[in-house]
Image (cartoon, rainbow over all chains, first blue to last red; front, top):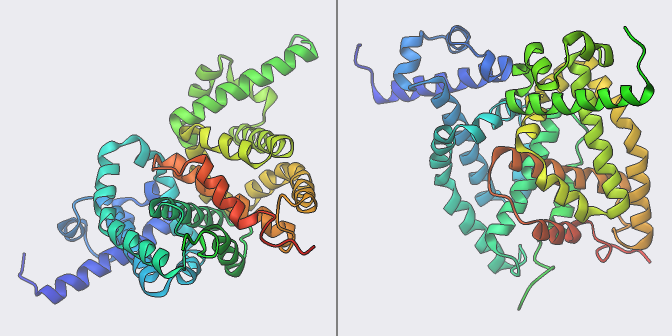
Length: 190
Length: 190
């Protein structure tokens, strides 16, 4: 293999991930064969698997990208930005996650690999919740983990309803009712 | 075909649906071949498809059973019973729904058939929400459709997190925060 610069490598990596994302969205995870991945990415299987060990690794990396982008939005711009982002996600891409839910539950090795990578954002999100409890944005009479789990539940619900193409509540309504659930005016102990 | 009594027909129908449910849960929708359905149900394909026109019809009928059972719980026992029920659903069966989300969104005919059958419970659920707004169980400053959409969002989120095998918040916590979101003390106009 010819030597290529770090910058070129990073570009290639991005090219591969973007192509894989659209290929998974178009054909589904099972339907995204290696031949289709080659075509969507514009590189040979040799070049693709030189960067990512397998189709699974491609998916895990894309899921981590999503988790990091959403965590970043949440930390820097708060819940309205996160809800807005989830409501705009490509339904076809969301369906790829759903297709893999059975696999995540039944293949402990696959689950471990996803959890390990997703673990990077857990302490960041946790710190953001605790800060929001201190400033009164969130109620402080509920364990921060439970706040996180409930918000996660609502975001998962939004993603599932969007993926199904069913009618969604407006972002404003979601934020208003979510504020009723976890907002600071509920349970300030001070 | 020999003539069989109505009672016997109803029993057969139940036998077919129960077998199909466990076959879909075990192998996934795509993996539930006609041969596997025959084995799980204990009847020949001829007998099965005499009751339901296709594998699709079997799935639609099972989804309608779920929607009716949950609607019945909701009307007669309220939200705690519904949340409890969703938290107990078989994750393997929930994964079958997720597997079909892409199909629901991309196949208008399939979506129409599901929507038509699910439509049976919509007015019942709507009437229950309006009653809960009158009695003060739910806030009355939000459109009942929006209350329904938000509760539906949370239930979808619960189902998705359960299907993934991820950590779930407790039923008590879900009900407490849901009460903060849609409960009557928020927005009584009276």
